[in-house]
Image (cartoon, rainbow, N blue to C red; front, side):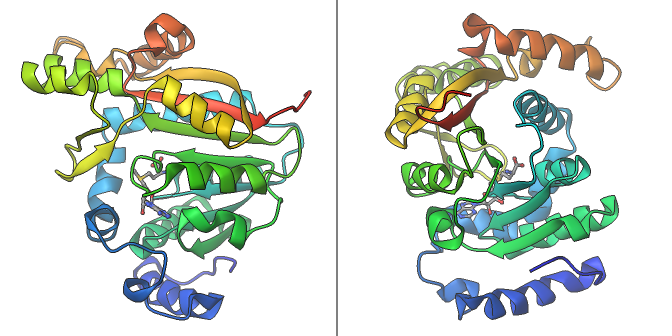
Length: 297
Ligand SMILES: C[S@@+](CC[C@H](N)C(=O)[O-])C[C@H]1O[C@@H](n2cnc3c(N)ncnc32)[C@H](O)[C@@H]1O
């Protein structure tokens, strides 16, 4: 479905209708394959809360840092992209502004609604296509047609992260196509719970925990080690071409640093730190850029 020019306040009902037309055949709540647990509920009821978070310095840095690294690896003459778990569409809008046609996939209609609004505000609605559905079904929804696949901060919330990566690998167009994955880093949780929360017991638990506490919604969130992400990518026939840390120290800066005024300096320092493995290892998020295994590009 290409985005239309409907007003933003009308989009949710419009999207719900389109979701039916697109063959889901049922309302979101009753859709097979789409879970109705707290994981998906937070992104339906709490979509606006997530959008507000992305406007904080922390949210902006995560988005800006991850996108800057993705941009370094965009294949030349990229035509089409898939934003898996697109959320409010921040990466989508940027890719569309670079001239790519972007397909947005999310299981939350309110998120797709916000993404549509963002695309309208940016004047790129003709560059986007919306798909309401579960990311584990990517390969059933699409053929091998994308030059770029963005998979940022969704694997923490899906039941089967490997299934999403395997599906993404199958929908990359060719050997130069690129997948960008961002996940929450276990080591980052260890530092955060000690330094920001002062919770030493939680910090120690986080040394080995596979799930951490999600502070925005209060639920749980899956965490990854760089090794666990790498081996999942390898099992999905994906080869890592670059690894970055996202937000190494900005979470821990003293109040004497105005994060608003110093945003650019913080961003540039974070860019440098994120490229260095010794700092990337303790970042809040790990980003892997990958291509199909065996690609000689
Ligand atoms: C933390 S947000 C990330 C949004 C965006 N990628 C970003 O970087 O800001 C996670 C998104 O993944 C979506 N999501 C979670 N599980 C999903 C699934 N199984 N299938 C499709 N989307 C899913 C949520 O609805 C939400 O929009």
